[in-house]
Length: 145
Image 1 (cartoon, rainbow, N blue to C red):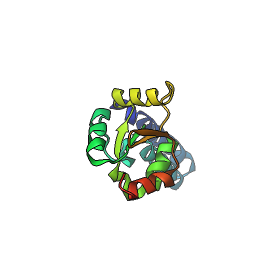
Image 2 (image 1 turned 30 degrees about the horizontal axis):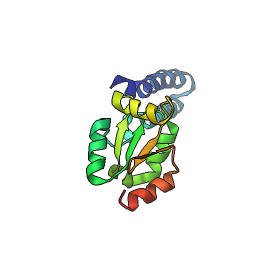
Image 3 (image 1 turned 90 degrees about the horizontal axis):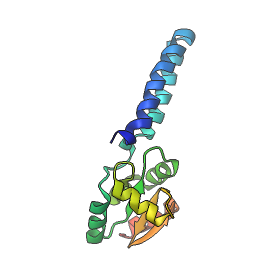
């Protein structure tokens, strides 16, 4: 669990210290602006931006029942964030697996990607797609899986 929040916490703490230092030297408005930027970046790198993750085995079970794709992701991944933001509300229709919180999910991704933890990896109808085009994933979600 800590690993998923690690970068977000580091960014937030660094932002507080830097904003304090800048605020004392350049004025409170500049310090506040620095703090807002760092907290925004920390938020984007946190698990909060993504729908609640489930374990890989649970995601696979649910996908077999409802036909929805499974997305393997990790916090801090720019490509995962791009996919999540481009999916909009449709992201809730997919099963999300945080590979930093789920060892089985990380193993699935490594098996698919020649030992690499390349994300996002989207599994649709049992077929994996590594870093797929977000528009293609949107079409798959709209068509019902």
